[in-house]
Image 1 (tube, rainbow, N blue to C red):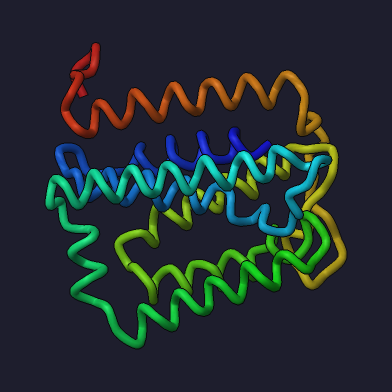
Image 2: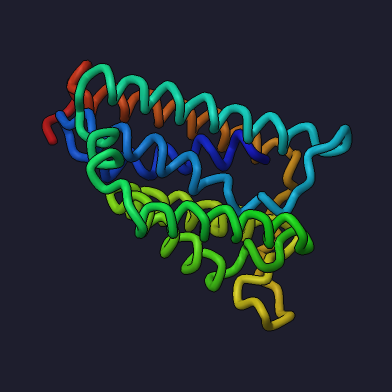
Length: 204
């Protein structure tokens, strides 16, 4: 589900973020959370899919708070966007929007859940904001990996019709809740550690 993808995407991105760097942490939080959920742009928010709408609102909130923190701390990510405002950035934003639009008109777990879509979205992010790329890509990869454990397969090699599925769990089952809680807990602890607010229990 959406919140699980967000949590795991952020935690995975923060796991490789640079310790002591606010810019790196902001990039990891924004890139990991957006990358973790964007593949589900093929779900139309409705009464039947409240989770999709909730997930998108959560990601927007996370991104806004993270960027405000970056701006307040003068950490560098917002400065990068201002400094690189130009044709590549605009092209990246337009490409990202176009891919999201196309994804919204495809079947669930088809195009947007493929390696082709992942490569296209990553190209858009690279053009728009290169510092986010690694974290975004990792978040996207965790989405595909998590969905591949589901009983409903994903068309990882789209446009081929074959589906990838380990058939281990259902989207709304106990496994989803357990991974979501573990993901958010890991994200909070990793963020605190990367910002040097806490120290590890064992020497690193």
